[in-house]
Length: 174
Image 1 (cartoon, helix red, strand yellow):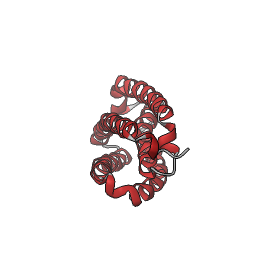
Image 2 (cartoon, rainbow, N blue to C red):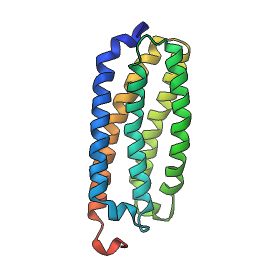
Image 3 (tube, rainbow, N blue to C red):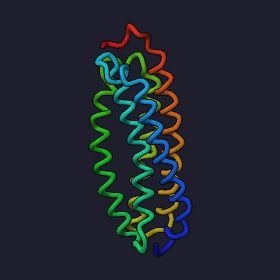
Image 4 (cartoon, one colour):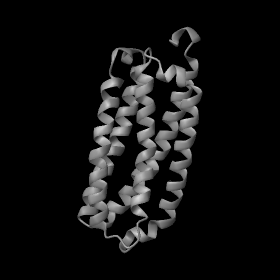
């Protein structure tokens, strides 16, 4: 890759591998708690599972796009712009479900998730603007959003798995 993104090759290769592996582990965790997550009694948990999936998808897509050889920063910025729009559309469904009837029972977790996750999304949008302007700070900020999204998504996965495991069998509708 030309420009400063080329210096980030090893970082993006590592985050691509990590996000792919963590997405696979998320699918395993969801499979183990599928009756709870798929049941009608817990739409907030299902919405949070989707949000965690999207949290891993961001670093995966960003890493893939950043590893395209000989790509100008402006083109990467356009690709991130397209991805960002799609990401917001996918998050809309989770947002509607997260603030449903079950919200009052999980209020702290949902608000924390949306505040911290929202700051990562805002930073990714700022990084996209930086890339479109071909500014080196955009590359650095984009890398920071990838690392932040991975770390935060690991925390959300841990929280989701343990909350799903605490659901009593009578809470699960067959």
